[in-house]
Length: 290
Image 1 (cartoon, rainbow, N blue to C red):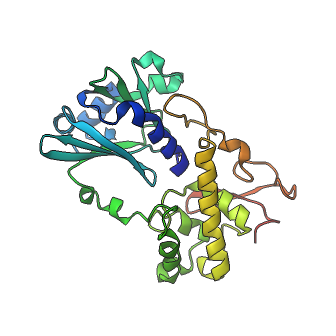
Image 2 (image 1 turned 135 degrees about the horizontal axis):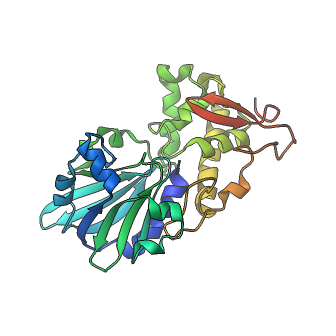
Image 3 (image 1 turned 180 degrees about the vertical axis):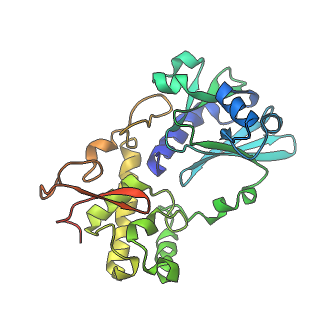
């Protein structure tokens, strides 16, 4: 699943060709149309397809930003303002091309689901191999309340204090620390890969109860989360399976992982162990993490 660094790179890849353009028309794949016909919300969530087009076509994309693992497109037409909110799910991605054949990866080329035809003659294409992603058209962020619960960006000045405050909430006392840091109300954008890597760097076992961590360990873990997320951005994100940049290239962060999908610990050589925590497969070194 694309996490904060991967979504940041997707956003950076589409901004130059998409920001300040106007959406002339929207095209949906047969899978999206069939899903709606059968009362399933395939990709386009919360609106009927015709209504989605009404509140999208003819709108200018004034700004694109990333918030946690979401991409926000701020739209405007005359005095009406809307926000397209997209989550990439397990294997979603945006591509900017002149025609579909320019999408390098054949799976993404085959599994396109929404095309935004822009007034600069380019197409903003949303592709999703597994169809777990979503695009919503909202009048305001408050129309999708869970977006308002997202923690500050981990690079913001108030992110550390926000994170530390959650250790005082009783519902987190007995939760594994891995489950706590995956909660976007606690830390924005930290998913399974980067959580595993940060816990390894901090020397903390992912199954430890949150309230067992000392204040020093809590702070150290936060700084390592921020560090691995910054590295993920610096190295173009992690391309282990489906993730690709907007231009089709792969990231390089997978070459720097210490425990996630590794066989042995790069520090002590101990075999990496796996344990399901918070429904996610956690990877850790039983010697280096306690």
